Length: 217
Image (tube, rainbow, N blue to C red; front, top):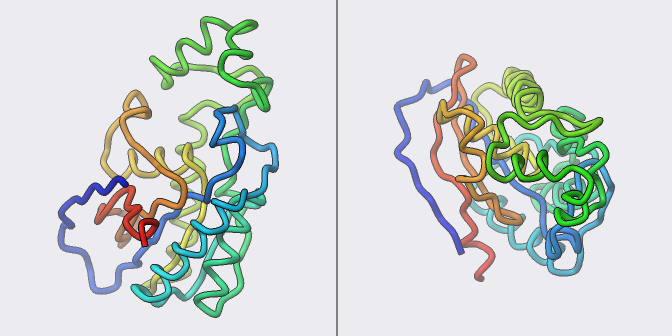
């Protein structure tokens, strides 16, 4: 279990509460591979995690909408949450995972055989890595901030759920904390972790991060 809490600055009464969730476990994040855009479903543990997350969200908040990455591991998680909240999950392509390009489907060790320097830098200096035929962190960070601002502008003074991926969530959290992409590996996003943010006038405040207490129940 990991739980990190941050004090919340004062926000406008017309703020939007964001419940940012990572999808549940899959076989490919139980045994580490570069997943990216490859569509891997939840395993049974991931389904159970999503059900516990849905119970936590539906009893703690009153979401007006649930948005999800189009990939099935996120979509399945979001649909379980949405059903618990009597909503329909809405796909938003801006929440999709990183494009790992030629690394997708490989373990880090397999990728290291062809791209030793790039893979080494991915784990030591991710902010400078250009993944072959893939995305860089700065591009994803710009995409997610634009996407979240667009969604929040449609749900002023409401609670919303966003279900995405570890890379996307970490970059969103780093933006909120105003830290650069070199800190990428210093933030954890466990399967079905809940992060809470407040949004007002295109500005964010962090309330809690990587909360998995609900998975112990």
